Image 1 (cartoon, rainbow, N blue to C red):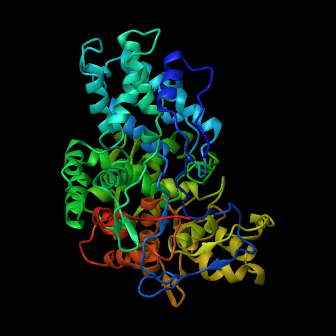
Image 2: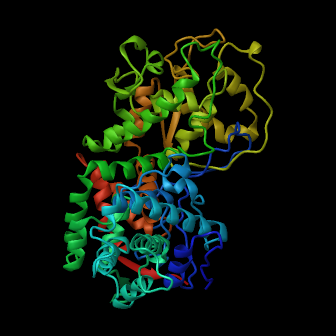
Image 3: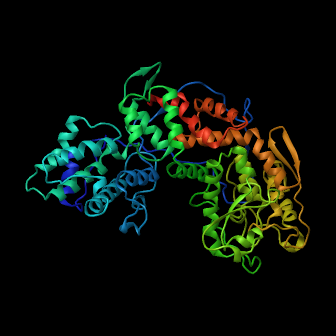
Length: 564
């Protein structure tokens, strides 16, 4: 175990409070990885792995059981932000450029705590504590006069219950109270600030310890407090509310039915659940740093309706669309078929709408459902998965292949596309480039076809019938939706209809949810949960929010198994 050490630059009460809360611990981080990257290349030599398992399109067998997990996962940065928001009302720090506190933390990472990451936690805790005690959110921490008898003890007990997601032990209360008797003594406000700092710098806040020992079969049953924490961080990225805490105190989170009732209540609180739903779909759609999303500029002489100012609203539209689908009773199919869009003055023309009818804010509109079905026909995706001066059927097709669970290994360096003077369409250029045997095995059946269907949209996402090279758009292709499932697709709507019901696509979506919810990569135990959720995705009326609630009903949600 490595000790967690303070740094000399911290203030007196900061250092003192760490001594009070000091411990030795090895901190294990969550895995937040998404699906494999696209490699950014054209795709020569790409290898493909396609799963087609029993009933759902998966490749791995199901072995019932609970996977081994860490007992002390670390809060993700987005969870840290949500927790200090809900506990203390802090959403931004001046030292972070008025950004969220996690702006100053180390990026999420796996493995033991590093010195750099630990010092960042201390610095952020110090700033939050100072801001809260001196500012309008003071009463979120201390509701009484710190100089009054019993005030700070009451504060320690009440705030500690919320911050640690369990009642404090008596020895913990006494440890915090040591700050009130240290010589030379600080002012009551300084002591209150040091106590708050201590809470925020404590492993019991930064981590989510699961230390219950009650056995259930070959696993360990989580305590009511641990179940409450799993519920709140899964559904809200944050700490439990008063209702959930009361249920935990009363021991009313012991059965699946009790857990489900709380989950359904919590999911209905849209302002708290929506950020989690959006975060998942960003992961599912690979919207992350160093991805193609929002990173592609375009030649404005070729595409005069495009402006760099469109990038931010394009990306914001994706978040709004995912939230809309989920919270308006939408299903997996609606992700591919919804005609809802969120448009502003910078993106309207790309959808064939009059920019004069829009302002800077996003406006909800309904587009032609035959022309704009689902998120893959939104300008955010289409313009991101294109080149500077042309479309990229390969990038678009590779992305769709990944949604079907096809594993694409990043390709080696390749020759550039043939010069356009030899061809009248971008499709012809790509077909020529990928025709050699070393490429065709992957590109012809898997990557190129869905990308060719989306050639009906230009490099910035506008509908096109004529290629900029002069030839007519040919958007018909034989698209493979499984090892033995190939369909001739003529329009984007046909493509989206097939993706919406594809077994492989549903399996991949369910697998991504399980991975996102558990913070671990797919494994043979979780395959059982994936298969069950996958089957439910084909039931009429089964919504995205139903799936979110069902994630709390698995054995691995309320049980744990010790890792080696």
